[in-house]
Image (cartoon, rainbow, N blue to C red; front, side, top):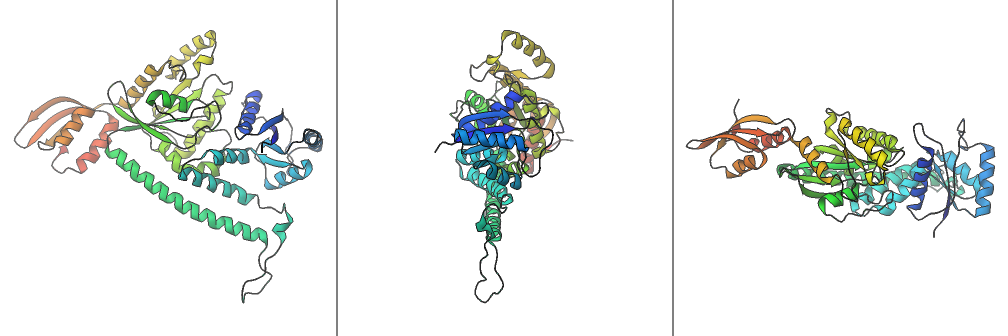
Length: 425
């Protein structure tokens, strides 16, 4: 059944009120809720018991009753007590921002891994909501067998069952992480750099991914249209082969528990050789969205050793006016970003060239001694480096090779497996 929804939120510093209100409305509509009312509420102090003051509570109670609203969405994190008291005051279901995002994730996750991650986040969230909202949680169960005493209350039993399920899911996710690690190790043996597309939800990552790889990943004008990561091989202008990864979109004020639950999926971002940050440059909230994405990446990956680990891509330039596009071109050069339209294909060649440059920076000249019978290693050097000089002797080849810093790490791993070949010092 489609339920009506009322939305209100506290404006965050540095954010556009209209954009934030539009975002929470889009999130509600993304799970099929029919919007009946939406309003920005400003207040000086958040009340610990009811979140809003008595005047706002009464005004919304009347609105909810008159409109027959069954679900109210508050674009803010609510404590369990606040959620319970709002439900009592308004006589309808109340969910906060975290609960709404979890509903969307639960509806969209398709793979077994994604479903496990969503369930873990949902259970962690649900556990904190086990307050005495319903009388059945205060009932007591009798002791079992010869065990005496008054037994345990229903709330304690529910919490224990949730804890047991959380432990089981974490164990299953560890297996998923182990499997991903094996897949990643296998990819590292194949000398392809990994490039991860990241960005705020609905920034156009999946549309760009489809444009670059001719894939058919779901791409809609909808928040969190895709959750599960997708990878494809892509050839760059230089002939370099890379693995391109499309990841879940980020969003502001995403709970730490939710980030932790999706860590197995987001490990593709952590281990990427290059992060391509896709921004919706036409959004009035683009700067704040970019800050949220970078903050999330730092939470996952820690401080960046090199700012060049991230390439900024300004998407949706087709939605800008001619004057805005002129201004953007000036900024593009100064900030080293690439302006594109993933829908129309504008700027795609420049983007591929920029990815090529980033992966090919810091070329190094290396002197190698290679076993002459090792055709695989020799072919690898010609394919991934530039052989500047070669001299063949009886059983070995001596080469001078120009190689990317990125490929140097892969070369080291190849040499470790071949005692007959080595770097000259």
